[in-house]
Image (cartoon, rainbow, N blue to C red; front, side):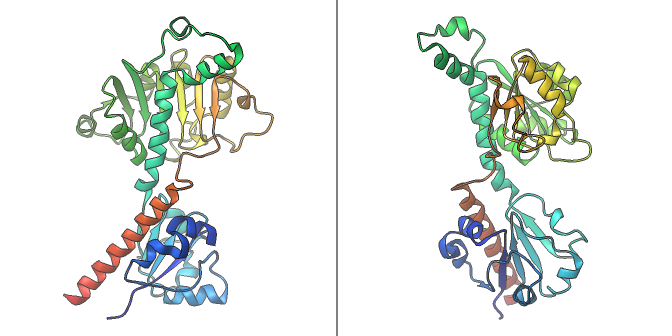
Length: 325
């Protein structure tokens, strides 16, 4: 029985080591043979030779596209395992029958964890309390200053029951005093009931939620989804969290609302990204900006690599099982 050969194609050797460990140790336990060096391009003679031997290609951030001209040279390629979300962008001319899988569910975990933390902190008005203490450097009467803060009997609105949105719902289960609303046209009433959430339309979600968290994918119908009219529906003092993509929100409308200080925002993504240096959002006290840290980073990359390795091992056992049957 021939040994299954695989190759790694990500943006750099450094990223490959962050994903799979020194010496790609997560992959060494898989009964398959790695061929070639880490591929960062597909045009060199070495890359062409590697691809010609590859049955499984492990891809990730900054993997070059695989157009038909490249796939024609990869005539043994049967599967692509992607360390990320959707794989469609890898195949500008279609996958040509090549099986694909992604590990977007693993990347949803840190996004959901950050979202949970920010929901709790937003409801406690933690960022304003930090700033107030820094400004006054004296006793703060919390009941006078933060009479409406807290995580009891508050409402969280999630835009999209995507993998990340569903992961947030799971993390919110230990907080039964938080009501969860979900807007997603594809969510059925039965699914909403099983998730323990209330399905509502977007205007109602914006109107009723103390915290609105965005988890929608970028589609033609979601670009600018959170526009002037939707932002205007948010209650005074409510918080918008965006860990999805900046283009889901109308940037000009959001800036106008935030400059007025009527609502708050926790933004891990913006449009554009990063914001220009002159953007007022950097200095507004009601805005908490982070540089796109919600997704897998640091130690969390290894989780993604471990899941890719497990997927590769599953493929190898499946193929070997069929061959031995």
